Length: 253
Image (cartoon, rainbow, N blue to C red; front, top):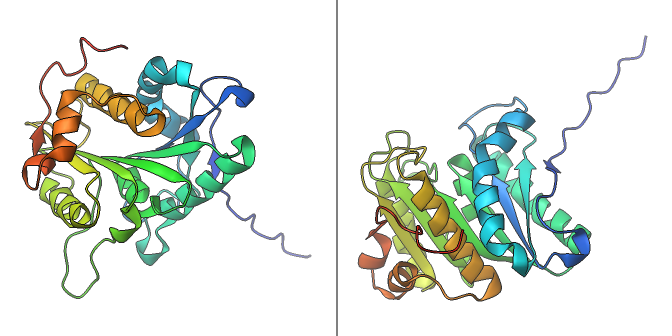
């Protein structure tokens, strides 16, 4: 009896949120969190639920500009060492966006391990902006090359990290941002005082900051004053910008 071949896993895009396809001028790809090592296929439902509130916030402020959002469903839950599976899937997703929508602006928005994937895949020629929320970056090891940053040149980059994150040291994202800033002035980083890895305590402010950044980076809208200041300030000031409580409450929602 012939053995049945194991089906090849494929990444895929979740259901489009936003305007009809012909009206789309910009796309946000939402990259969920993951694990360091795992061959399991992630739960599509759990992935979608984890990023849906952020997607809704982005669409509320940018729907008129023609923003669409897709969740990227990974082939595997883990980063898996040199395979960097979520980053590969993110690059595939950008190609798929171009196939579906044509020449549109693309922003990668990643949470946790998805933040690392967004930074790594940010070098795709179609990517205009990258947002990494509490990126799960590896420990620095002199025997291993550090996370690359040259691919971020020419992109606008926002990192956000809670100062009480116990899952991944926020200083790692600061050091990566400092290296990236040397080659690209359009890098900024905000710190969320006393918040943890999930950024739950100030979720509304984090989502408002992300929406403000995406709208400005993709559609040329004016950035809020804190984002302008963070982009303009030299290190370390622009890379340790505190996210104020109540940020975005008086801005369009």
